[in-house]
Structures are given as C-alpha cells and as structure tokens.
Image (tube, rainbow, N blue to C red; front, side, top):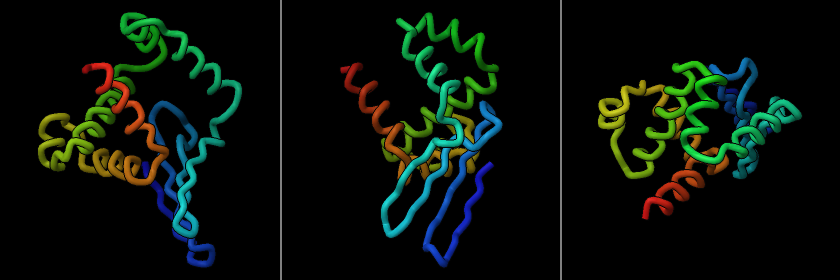
Length: 136
C-alpha cells in the first residue's frame, strides 16, 4: 500500500511505503525545499538491528537460503527478489512492458520501485553496483 500526502503549507510531500514483511510503514520519504530525507524511524530499534545483524552474519548463499526459508514466507521472499530484479531492469533502461513480462511484477510494483530509485536512499543502486562489480 502506498500513501502520498501533500501539505501545501510546509511544501512537504510524504510517501509511506508498506510491505507485507512488517505491519508498520517500512520507509517514510519526505521532501522539503528540494531535499530528500529517508527515515526508517518507525522500525529503527533493537529488533530491526537484531534482524540486520543476523543477515550480516550470514556467510554464504546457502546460509541465506536456510535463514530466509525460516524467517519469511515464500511470497515475501519472492516479492523482495522481484523488486530487486525490477530495480535492476529499470536501471538498465528496460520499459515497464518488458519488466512486467519478464518479472510478472504489477505496474504498481514497478512504479513503487521506480519511485524508490528516484527518491529513495540509493539502496538499490548501492547493492546493484556491488553485485555487478563482483560479477566482473
């Protein structure tokens, strides 16, 4: 679910992105006076730190398979991997039609990923740049 609110008084646009993995907003993107800030404050804390530390402790792909098999549903894992593939294709210049055909992602998902690429915290770019560098 995606909610956008514009407050003309503050000239602020907020975009809240929800995901099936969490019941609370995953990310709040705010824009004021041309600058963007990404806040994950609604989730930031000991529990999320523990999750990220657990992910960072994984040593190889097989450990990732084992961990994510236990911690997430197949649908959640599929949604995350689909979003990453959509981001990769968008950054390569693919059209929405090609992305939709190849990934089976909805146009709403493609648009959400596009918005994150354009206005997010550069997470997709950071990860995809690293993965592509390792492939060389």
